[in-house]
Structures are given as C-alpha cells and as structure tokens.
Figure 1: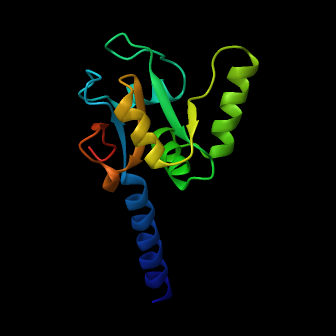
Figure 2: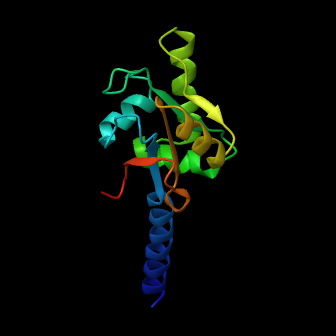
Figure 3: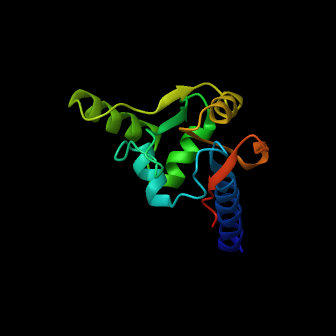
Length: 142
C-alpha cells in the first residue's frame, strides 16, 4: 500500500512537471516567412550555433531573464539543462569570443511586443498568451 501511494505521488508530480513544461511555445512575427521550426533548429538558434533564419535574416532570439520560471522550463525542455549549466555554456562562448547569449527580456508581454514588431525576432511564451500578433513556429508537444 505504501509503495502504491508513493507511485501515485510520483506519477502525479511527473504529470504536473510535464504539463508545466509542455505549455511553452516558440513564436515569430507572422511576416517573418517562418512557418515552422524543428526542435534542432530552435536549439541551434538559442544555443548560438546558427545566427540566421531560413529567410536569410539575422535571427534575434529573445530570452527571459532568470527571474522568470519560463526560462528554466524552456531550457529543461529544449536541451535538458538547468540555468546554471546554460549560464556556464554562455560564459565559455563569450570568453572565447564565439558568441553572445540571446537578448534578455523581462516578461512575456515584452517578448510579444518585440516579436510582433520585428520580423527577425523569435521568442518563447506560454501557449495561453498566444494571440494574432504572432505565429507559433515550434510546439514541443508535437
């Protein structure tokens, strides 16, 4: 009985974590020319491996500040890394002159404002915040 209760608690916790992570989507400006991105393409843009969009424009990935829980969820879902690991990754790249991290923004509202007014910008937000100003280009649940 004790083992069954433990199993139920673990599954419930896993379900909550999975649902919390799965509600993030990557967005772009509807006029960006981007219809969809694969997980690898999103990883390459957010980890600095690729700086251009398929249209040839320089990409402008937007990242939430560490104070936002969305950032931790996003990187855990995308590359299975926590924020200290992501910060260490970017510190190494910046020190070696090989890149700089995505532009930091304070909130999902700021992400929406920048993406809706800039064709090269991409960002991540909670699915429930989607509106007609932006296009969803990556859904981790699909």
